[in-house]
Image (cartoon, rainbow, N blue to C red; front, side, top):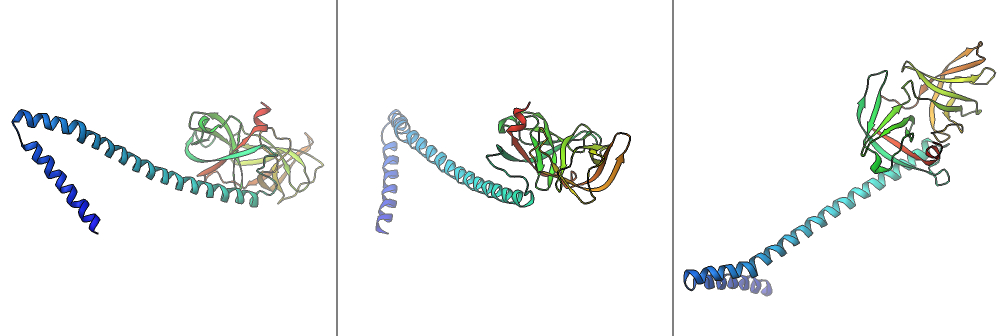
Length: 259
């Protein structure tokens, strides 16, 4: 307590002494003393004060960034656990050479027949054309255009989107496509193949762009085309494109290397 009182009185005495020095002498002397004190005391003190404040601000910003990074790491851990639980046939592993990014959907481009999604990840995040886009419940689409800090996603509802798929139960192969944005089909199924209502369809090992094992949808209706010796299955899609907030971009190097 005594030390604090002494420091307080010392500061007052120093201020009184400086004030007395500035008041003594002629006007020219006072001006010269004021210039001297401002040059060798005030401005250095102000510079130190500014640097100290900047240091405090930097430390505060660093603490905020550390907290944000910790939250993102927890979100990623939660997402990985959710993916492993809901996509048991698909592993995020170094063996598959797959990493991922979580992106926010920030805009929708086009009409209902030609709709694309815009996400907030781009070249700055090493996103490339043809990278697959999924959610925890299934496929969403693929990247078709990449800007500096955004990308365009072609969704599975677009008539230009196609991907090789298979029946999870028995490995029967086919091609997924959407007709008129409303009818999602597994087409080109060999006519003699066994496929039942309720079967789960996943991306196949024949896909150029998607890793094997990502859920697509479940069979709700079976059709046959005896003329072309093939059949098709109408699917209930797992991922709902009307509920798009966050998506997962798979940095699937295998797909990129095939280009």
